[in-house]
Amino acid sequence: MPLVIGVPAETTPGERRLSVVPDVVKKYLALGAQVVMQKAAGMPAHFRDEAFESVTWVDEDVDVCAEADILLGVQPPSLKRIGKLKPGAVVLGFLQPWSDAKRVERLMERNITSFALELLPRISRSQSMDGLSSQAAVAGYECALIAADHSPKFFPMLTYAAGTIRPAKVLVIGAGVAGLQAIATARRIGAMVEAYDVRPETREQVESLGAKFVDTGVSAAGLGGYARELTDEEKAKQAEKLAKAVSQCDALITTAAIPGKKAPVIITAAMVAGMKPGAVVVDMAAESGGNVEGTVAGEKTWVNDVLIVGPTHITSRMPVHASEMYAKNLFNFISPFIKDGALAMDWDDEVLAGCCLTHEGQLRHAGVKQILGL
Image: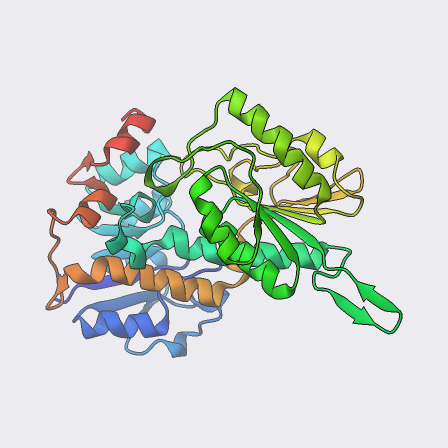
C-alpha cells in the first residue's frame, strides 16, 4: 500500500488557508504517495476540487483520518480529530506546541508522531521549510495594506493642480520577516518609512529597503534570530526614545512577537495619546496579546482620535498565495523522507529531530516539555 497523505478541511473559524495546493499534490504523487482529501477542503482558499488531479476524495474528516499515514494541517488538530487518527500516524503542520498541554497529551496517548513547524531549527538548510517566515511575509504585506486602507492620508506623494501632498510617514516596529515585508510594501506604496527593532543588527536590512532606522540605544539580540525580553530599565529607555518617533508618524505597524509567549507591550497608552489626530495603528500581534496598549483582537478601536486595528487571521486575507507558500514548506520538510512511496524517517537528521514534538508515546522536545511541565 502506498503512503497516504491526508488533507482534511480546516475547521477553525476564520482560517481559510490549505496545507496542499494542486502543484504540490502532483509532487507527492510523483514520490509514489497517495493523497486523500476531504471534499471542498480547498474552497475557502479558492481551490476547487477539480483543480486537484488524481486525488482520492472522501466526504468527512473521519474518513481522511482513518486512511492518513501523514496528516497535514494549518491549524493544530482538535482533540476529537486526533482521536480519529490511526495509532502511529504522523501529524505535520503548525501545532502551537506551547499552548495546549491536553493536545500534546492526546498526541502521546494516541501514539502519534507529530512535527511542529514552530520548532524548526533556525539553520540555513531549513529555510525552505520555514512556515513561520513564509506566513510572516504574508502578514507583513497585509498589515501595510491595512494601514494604507485606514489612513486618512495618501501614502505616496501626490501632485495635483493646486499643489503637492506630502507622503505619509509610516513607522514599523520589529524588523523580522513580517516587519521587513511591511517596510518594503509601505515603501512601494510611496510612504516615507522609519523602522525600529531592539536587535541592532537589523539596521542594515532596514536601511537596505530605503527606510530610516530609529536608534534607541537598547539592544535585545537573542538566540535563534529572535529578540530576548527586555529588562524594566531597558524598557524605560526604549520607551522614551520611541515615543518621539511614534508621535511623528501617520501610521504605526507593530510586528514584535516571541513564539510561544505573550506579545511584548511596546507602545503604551501614553504613546498612543501622543500620536497625531487621525493616525492609524495596525497591531499585527493582536492575537497573542498585542504590542499596543488598547489593542482588541479582531476589533477596530478609537482611542481619542487614533484608530487601533487589531487584525486576526491576517494570512487568511490572501489564502491563495499563503496556501501555496505553506504547502511548499510542508513538502520541503517531509519529502526527503518519502522514498518509493513509503516513509523512511532519519532520526539523525537535525531538522527532523529538532521539529519532533511527540513520538512513540513520548514528548520529545525538551523546550516544550519544560514549558508545559509534562
